[in-house]
Length: 79
Image (tube, rainbow, N blue to C red; front, side):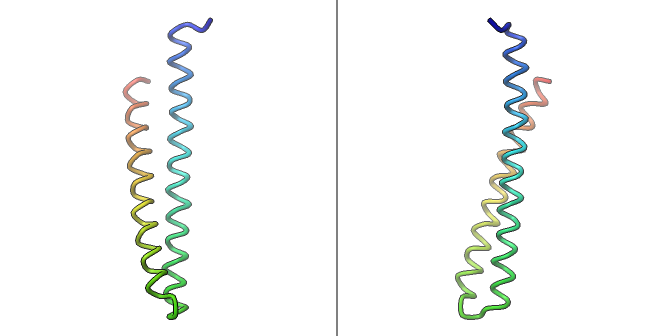
């Protein structure tokens, strides 16, 4: 049976991994947003759609990073 300290250490490790995952999702979303923005410049037939997708993905990028930063803050409080 793990001790309370071992449980907390395991929880903190899981939170570190969650933070990395969330930041990674933010980066992937930002990259995809940039691709849509570039495509909007190249292909005028889908310009409006691409710009909307880019904007939506930009918002998602910010949300992913905001959540990751909150998880990071929680972890630092307990380390």
